Length: 208
Image (cartoon, rainbow, N blue to C red; front, side):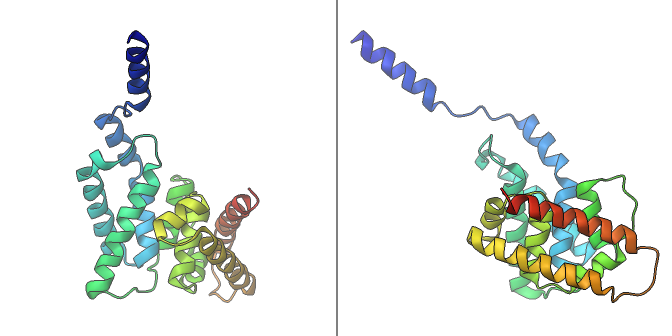
């Protein structure tokens, strides 16, 4: 009988859930605000609407905090909430529009380096030429640092589909940037540097 009690105690310890820490959740969720705003802006292009969607997603994430499983990827979890919120609005009454000036800058710079002040007008125009699916995939994988599997889970598709979208987006962006079909400005170097960072990140994941 004693051995059974020991076994039961061991099983209880193994099955014990991870302790939920609300303060830790709050801190981590707060740190994701720039990433959520950037992802939201890459989806809809309208800065004001994107910020509203990001704010709603944050509120939904906070209200659903007890459903979050500690130890899993909080960024992927909140990105999924945000994406669902965006497409819910889009299905009801809204059509995607072109990226506004400044959206691409925040999409890349706020994720990679908040102190980087480079302007990315060419990158905005290049991203705007991609399909919605390709733009979403390259931002999730190349700019937000998510894995292919995490991006696929967020988008509700197969990992292979995300890889294909990233590959096509990569080829399209390289072609667009190499053609240099933009107005002359001083933003070109910054745009190319940022684009190079995105594509290198996609390459790194592809080779894993």
